[in-house]
Length: 383
Image (cartoon, rainbow, N blue to C red; front, side, top):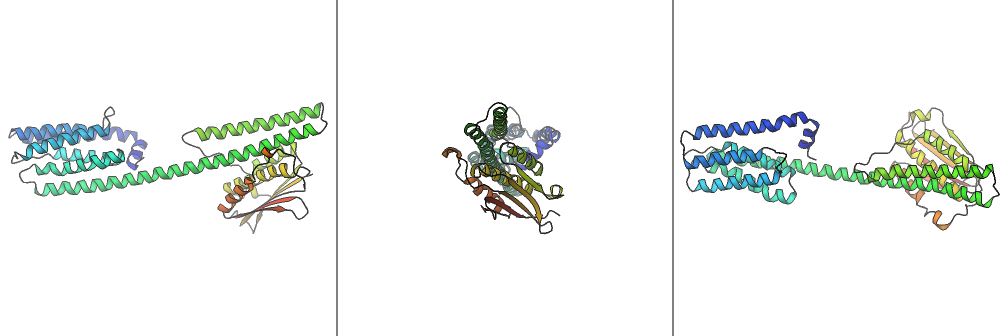
């Protein structure tokens, strides 16, 4: 959308006033010409006045009449009048209102018409505007004036069109990036919840659970499935909409909820958050910490089935100039998942790219006391 149209949308009352004001100005010019030419009623003067009225009517934006047909009609009428008058020039021919109306149409066409139409119709309108003063017996300075005006209006309109096109491309790039981000988020959510469902179902299958314990297992599976479906519906709804909205940013509070849910179906999670850090931590860093913890807990379910506990520690480092997130488990054996449920190992890769994009580092590997450890260090100012 061009800056002019954007401004008019933000100021509807001004837009409603501008249309009749433009019409009044053009009608006043043509009326003045008609009164002046009526002193010498001749056929050429009648042609000039009639063409001026018709072109000015075409220049006024009408909701029922599209821009391009109006512009073509105005150009055809103006050039027809010019050709007729060049063969029989009167001594005085104004045509001021017609020339200004052609400038208005030229600007609108270059701003809003399709590229091919603007490339063809723009020069026709611009040259038609310059040709209007040529009808006069002594065109002189008026021809030069309207030639300069046509060039200035064309250059400014093309500049606005280029800025509008760049803005559209930037907006499309942002939307594409947002949709890719949402697609990554959808993958992470599905992997997290579905892995929990599979592990719980396997636990119920390979162990002798009856009665209340079986009911608890099924309840946890039902809860995890409902959460996964709800998350998928929310994200897919955003992906289907024409205007994607940024998802709510997760933070430390969501990390507490995440570890509490994980502890219900898997090994207990011990969470430590440095006192006062939650209030000082920037939103983007908190969201990234949430992603790291979620991906690490998902991997712990898959690859540390025998873990007796998971430790999550979130601290500030360097006197408030960095963030340290560590997720450690003591497991050594992977869960017996089917090949389709094991994943392709892209979760940590994509997460490492996100961390690197924010200037941090993500390291995953064996822990110092056995098990597995994921460490994220992120430089930032959280003082």
